[in-house]
Length: 356
Ligand code: AMP
Ligand code: MG
Image 1 (cartoon, rainbow, N blue to C red):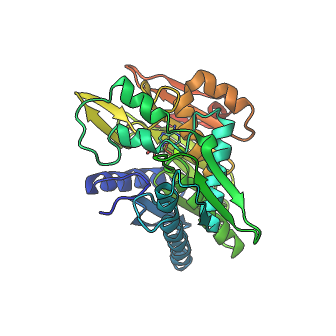
Image 2: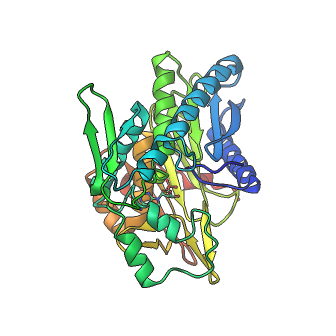
Image 3: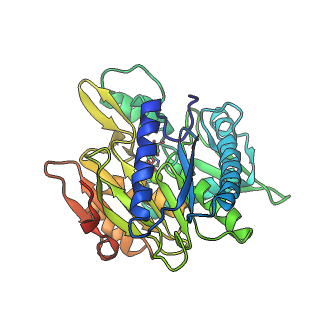
């Protein structure tokens, strides 16, 4: 399977993702006599899925086609693993001073990533590429964790303020990175952005009542059927592959995303390191198993779940207080794990739906 900026998974991982999506969907329709229909496919190195109410399979095919086209367009632009992508061109030109012209997707996604970095005080950092590579998330055959000097050197090349985004006279944009060996990595926001693009495209053609899921970045439109509640989504238990902690029901247009330490990790000298890096320390975050975020858009949920994974519950709750419409659940990586919901999440969470 080719490698993408998005989570790289083996076939077994994808099969597990498919099972998880199914569980989420079962949860979505638990109180309905006939389950919604779902189509799944592999895309951007993860599982994509669209759902629509039972009996609307022809419409679901149209939704699948539109979402598939949108995801493919965005992947061409934003995959760091595709040498022809815009992101690869920006990284290759880092430090040269030559701005790389951007298509609409790259311009929008980079601008959103910069906003997320600013909002989270740098906890979300789209220039985390050198640290991802250093810790072995870019295919290196490292067996020991990097030493202090290596971490300090890589941290010196991680600075979201060094992303330059210019508007050209014709109204298009161009981007560049200030220093050699810097590297953009939009893995923390690109899937959410892609879900929003598919959502907007479908809404523009008057589609309603559908669910889009790209690797656990989910956005809902309408309901799973006439007269039924909104789409009900299972929140995965980070410690049990097919287990759920509970469910949340999405309002029309709302999104949910989860960042998990089980999604992708490396094992160095017998210790597992998860794929989310704290840019302040230059080290993978420890002590957090998963963070689930409800937000008005999928890009916001995606960026915020990564941000709040880095910040933890205490600092994260302060950020949430200034972020309207967003709610989070932290699950700590300890025995037993602690579930820490923000007040807004607690009000929406249905733990009684746990399926053991
Ligand atoms: P997510 O699963 O949405 O939390 O995204 C995790 C991915 O975002 C990783 O696989 C990296 O590609 C990237 N990433 C890791 N750490 C950070 C960070 N601190 N800020 C932004 N992106 C990050
Ligand atoms: Mg994210």
